[in-house]
Length: 472
Image (tube, rainbow, N blue to C red; front, side, top):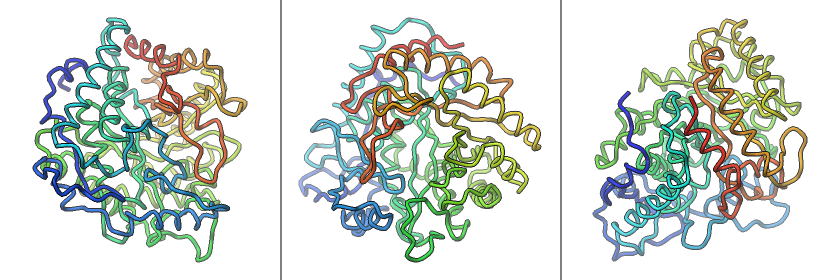
């Protein structure tokens, strides 16, 4: 694989054209008639403009009411995470925008130029304080991050954060691609939000691992009148498979996005994750079922690979928790139902009290997979993290001073064991703390960020970044 320029070097060489923005029609905004329409990234908005229904807050409100989440009226932010019950972080004024929009009051060159300058300053500041050791000697894309704020934030903010992530040693971003947002009506697609994220990530030298999940009302298996907060799988797995194939057509090696934006360094999506934590009742219709999940995987993988034959397919991340079915039980059922040939890797979320326990859980699942006939399958830790702040939770919460050392240690131990575990990579959850979900309560998972909710770096960030730059 050809070596990639360092983040600092890439930013120094960047031009406004190379950082041109996607400019889809903004949600709940009226475009400025005087704004220029010559930016290359305006092309995709002409093909996939948001529907009036999707642009309406009223529709979002109905979505949450359907899940029994509105005991009181909720004034929804434009960045509501439909399908995962979260909102975009409260980013300072001028730094946050509606998810699929850009500020129409700015000329096409001002925003990318500002973003490039901000990102360059961030990268220079980082490299002035970071060690001069070479980038970690691990495979490209081995170390990743989840960054919902870069997905929902305004382009200058998103570009700055993605550049900082690359400079910190993260080379892949795992992001939910919400089916209910992208295909709100049968065979009607809106890629505006995902276009922005994929292009911004490419500009920052970061690959994207999309997590495909969501419950469009037209496709769900949810019984009529059911108001459970649990996520229901599709009634027909071929609908989900078509969704996966459409993403490959748009973002894969021959994707339309790269044809529409030739000024952007082509950074195609090569790996896809199918669903999230289906061994948890909350994510699988209150009844985890490894065989039923296998049917979804087999169908989606076949349809995805019909478009992108070499696509790397990852199962949903399987957490170890008393709240759901045991990983070994679920994975055995999944593989017995012949999901193995449809996959390249099994996802795992080995949250635990310390690094020793994380490694024990991960090695245990490796043994289970091998014994179930999956020796050829990789493992991928698609979530791991520790909260620093928020409600104290045993096995999940540490002090701010402890967060950095424990995260750094788990990266080092997993990297050392990557061959014996057949480990494809590890993704930290998350870059920034999140706000409380609409209608929900505060809990440890909202405080695992390397930044607090105001965007201030926690002590852990510098420790983790130094570790990643030295990692061998």
